[in-house]
Amino acid sequence: MRKPRKAGGGSQRHGEQPSPDAGPGTPSQVSPYHLFGDADEVTRFRASLLSWYDQAKRDLPWRRRAAGELDLDRRAYSVWVSEIMLQQTQVATVIGYYTRWMQKWPTLQDLAGASLEEVNQLWAGLGYYSRGRRLQEGARKVVEELGGHVPRTANMLQKLLPGVGRYTAGAIASIAFGQVTGVVDGNVTRVLCRVRAIGADPRSPSVTQHLWSLAQQLVDPARPGDFNQAAMELGATVCTPRGPLCPKCPVRGFCQAQKRVEKVQAAVSRRLLGSPEQEKTLEVEECAPRRAGSCPLCLPPSEPWRQDLGVVNFPRQPARKAPREQRVAVCVLQQPGPETSRFLLVQRPSSGLLASLWEFPSVPAEGTESVQRRALVKALQTWVRGPLPLRSLRCLGEVVHVFSHIRQTYVVYSLALEEQPQGLLPSGARWVSRAEFQAAAVSTAMKKVLQLFEGQPSGHRKASSKSPQDPATSGPGPGPGRQCRQLTLGAFFKPTSAP
Ligand code: SF4
Ligand code: ZN
Image (cartoon, rainbow, N blue to C red; front, side, top):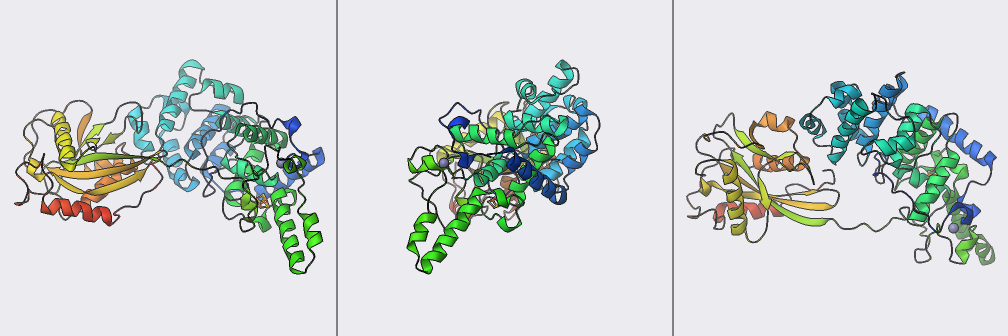
């Protein structure tokens, strides 16, 4: 019933594609080389892809659920949840989250009645947390404003539901409602760029427009949902980013990239046999505008064909912007009690990165370590009444976590209270046990911080006799300071890309 995808491992989706602007590559200007020329070719392409899909599709929980659901709104909901979860996330990761989600909220009405805290809790570790929030906002809108009915067309889905862009709208409409509308995600982009030898930047407006146009031309009117899923499945499992399995590909006979590889190989063989004239003939490009340097879809002249890459020359990989570097000082504040330690968590603001999630108290890690310590202590004192045993504030090391656009380094400190804290915590803060922490709406980065903390020699620490007189303003002293640097150099945790 549906697919997965991504531009790296074959099973996650990119975010929504941008709406194409009118670009230089409008269909009428495009060389036939990048088009499907006749109806017969389109029919054969559909048949090859669908017949393969019927045999090879993966058994995934959202496919099973959608296939067995007769109620259109329930079916749309089951597709919608899977599509949102699969954006930027691998299928293998999504399966568990999807299963737990549907057990907890089997209907739109159930989800509409959930709290944001519950949603964040279930979403914890999946990353891109605004997806869960928007899903729930969408469910509420359907229940409270649309009479419990999910909009039935891609246009209306995109228009009315928060977090539903062009791709997701098309996927829900075709899979759940059978609307004949094509979709383009990262997997489809890769497949189409190879099948029609499109080497220009797939994110450019002209290429985006062309890909949507191709997808609309190709989608099977009798089985639109299956066709869209088949195209995505092909990209996820056969036409993968770096290791495409061309000999097993059901649409190999339609693939211009594959034909080009075969021609280059034939030319190389002829050269080895000493027939340079024939080689010249074989280098003639089928895309005529390319020779004039005017094709907006071909590989740019500055990026010639690389024989070692073969079909992977398509699509061209746009340069990625390096993530922004950011440093945060974070403190694991621990209540006394060797067996039943509790940690202080505070809630993040309701907007921005990791909105409304819980975390250990933190401050921007600016300036020297002394400055960081001062700032951290000041922040802690806004949450916990009474004196803090500042001599125990220790730097444990660093944890690096890569979000989509930020490479965040957490400088991890710990502080163990010597007495039970007095009074109530302000709102937005709470003490949690280890088990409660694991079940809470916390990010993967915070779990890494806890792992680093628990990797320390002892759970509950006492002040070192060598600690400086004013740990809040001085350096860490011989113990903690060295420990901090040792752990950093030891690459305690490797950066990962999932938030
Ligand atoms: Fe992709 Fe190879 Fe199939 Fe072409 S033949 S669509 S490059 S797997
Ligand atoms: Zn071209």
